[in-house]
Image (cartoon, rainbow, N blue to C red; front, side, top):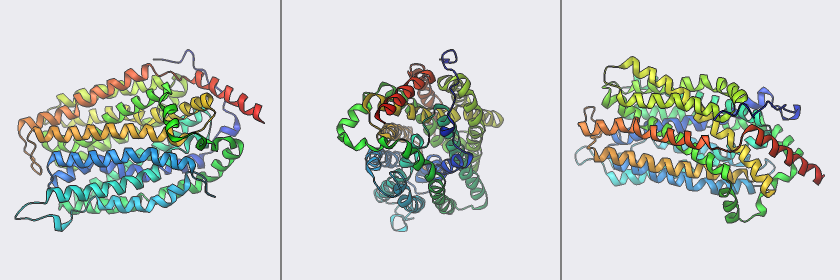
Length: 477
């Protein structure tokens, strides 16, 4: 687990060090995606059941179908962005033209079409289902067009092992900061507006505006650095020479890549399942007001933000695997504690939220800092650079797993006789909510820890990979 004996500090060449403005601009690129994704994770299921009036199983089906489409379009955009040729480069055109549709379709999530609602006969369940499916498909297409090329910028900005971890700490500082901002807005709006449908509509409108601008800040602030790296490594634009199916075969024959996929899937299955169930847990099990769920989420996200840079510093000394183990172990304790939490234990609830934030921080930081190392290993083995393929298929499998997981949660609530829009629930529904916030994510965290233990790419191994790549490149000159 601890790589400190074999992982030494490797000097970073001056040409590989990124200045603060570049790191800040890159980090800002994840702000809009974080705001929209966080609000959807925490509130969409609750909105669909308690505002739109959909059954829990049908609401879970909306999440699953739109999530699977979100997964399917990832490798497609990944391949296309690898093959894009423009005066703005490979990644930037997708971000430029996807940002505005991202905001528009996010807002449309929070509208309940009046022609699908009827106070006397009840809501048109299947009409609502297809409306939110269509909106989800368009939104997730725009989300992928912005976010996946953005994430694929990481190896195009620096080749250094430690600089990548630092770069990702800035990215997730903005990501968690955006999540916190969205929750603060939710807290303010929920406290001042009493009508539920108006609450979500106002929140959706404000967040839609906030999600557009950061992409353009990222492009403006990183374009010079990307151009410089491209000049130094012109051979990295050759990924289109291998057919698509062959690229998939090579990607999934990369053992280290499969470990990273598994680690990320387990980590984010725990994160997003917990986030989805928090509003139900706070309102239905703890018997508190809906705005308290935003406060609990703030405890998690605020701690995760504060811990990003300490975890980054520890990663340089102890290695990525050791830091992942430290954070996830604390999170494991928090998830178990939430299952046994009883109504009235408000202080303990907030303490467990803070404790969970330590682990959530490593779930943000560590898997994404591993992927660029995997890409270098693939380049060493194949002579090709396919950032879009690796990023795309990492997120594809993660999103399919999460979509199925959230669908199962919806089915479980429906089977447990959950009553949409009611605070008082039957004992069977309350037990299902507790399982979804305790044992289910606990199993996912344990799975991530097992995979991290066997992850093969230490810092020393990565240094050897980079040395061999430099030797190969020097021979081509």
